[in-house]
Image (cartoon, rainbow, N blue to C red; front, side, top):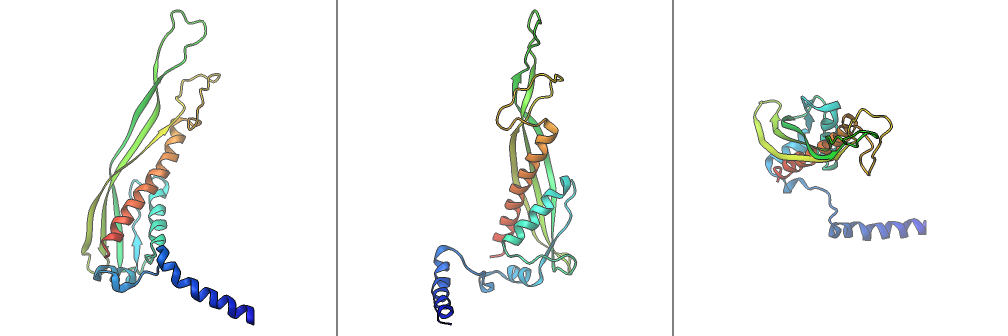
Length: 196
């Protein structure tokens, strides 16, 4: 019993100290009326069209939950609607393809080995009952660069360096996961700041 009281005393001393380290419980009186309504009624995330394998939708849900914004499936008071715009997949890095042994004169081909994908998003927070759009923003462009192994059509040649272990189709999947995570962070951060 004595040890229990000691631990309780230590906890009661250290819990208030956490606020000095930046940890705190979000208090609703610091929120705008929109923020108070959102935390009371909850939000649901609409499925995002052109969302590759649901990566952006799951990243949005993860980011909203880390900010302690209550999520709901069908009974939420607000809907977060995201539309992806201006998706670009471009080649930004090039290298010479290796020549075949015995080629005279040697042939030089330039092949791509680095890409960049970028995207923007149009974000709306919609009140479910009235249909009123309370937040309507365009989120700035996010981009991710990635390396990949060029498809040279030769099985015996592999010029592997760090990050170039995958062909373009597989490397872009990994890059999309990172891109959608960054985009979800930017979207939720902007929506979160509008609540104060």
